[in-house]
Length: 191
Image 1: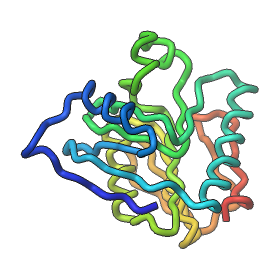
Image 2: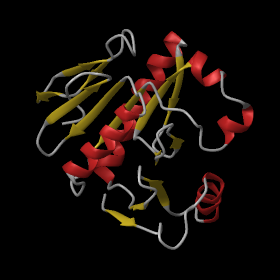
Image 3: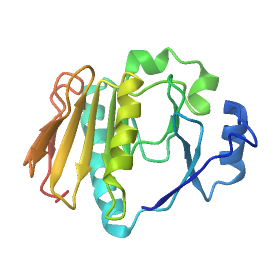
């Protein structure tokens, strides 16, 4: 997925409501904003990435239905992170008590909350450095656990709040650790 970054800050500083309205008025576009308020236009994923992302999301949903510990969100969900960016992880999860603490209005728009868990599955055309910067934005927002899955290089970067990034080469499984208790992602279908 190729992303285009547009800096409109010298022309207009979009409010959160204006950004939300821009997204509603242009549903055919996938839009995000980075920590500097720059608009990011994302292209759709290709078939292979979309297929793998759907399979991963399904595994999170099945685990969550069994545990009833939180809420799972797909790649279309945009979060207003507390540190400024508006981001849409490929898969995300929020602990149920934190989700329920939001008002109905907050849950309906771009929820003003950092997920507890985020996953980014790189497309072949994604920039590793840009995706790593996105992961750093998540961690600055206090996301507790994040996975950056790089299919091309067959590695996973694991981001944990307050810790150094761990890089795994061609792992067979990934553990949800204490954030997603009992969750294990079988990586065979990812690679």
